[in-house]
Length: 200
Image: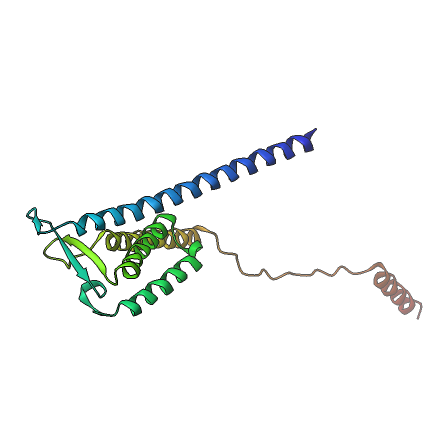
């Protein structure tokens, strides 16, 4: 009866774990698609901008970016597309090392800009804070994803170092002292020797 109950509990726990994995998997897919749609729709909206819309702190204007961030690697679309593909492959390969939120943000951002390079031959930028180079939603996803990943890695490293400090260190090897008791044979032999000396 005990074995049956334990096996039944294990089956229930396995089902619960499978359901949790499925839920987290669906959540990740939905979040990834939402991020991609936000990037695509905002860029489609930017294509319709005929003039600069200025709200003081932030302005929106349609800008063609044939390079990377901060206007580097201009007119190097093919090279930057290959760099994006390689970076995406490495991130997917080391998927287990990344926190889920950071992974989704970074991959969605890379794919969003990569789609621009493949479709148009350039990246659409439209968000202008005036003190910073013009960027898009995909750029912000990548930056936020990197920041989230670094913070989570730093916290994990801190917790691991604390746990190592709290764990008691094994003491040095204690020297074992072996006590040898005299055997009965040796005692009897000594008694015989003493008796032999007395007779003389």
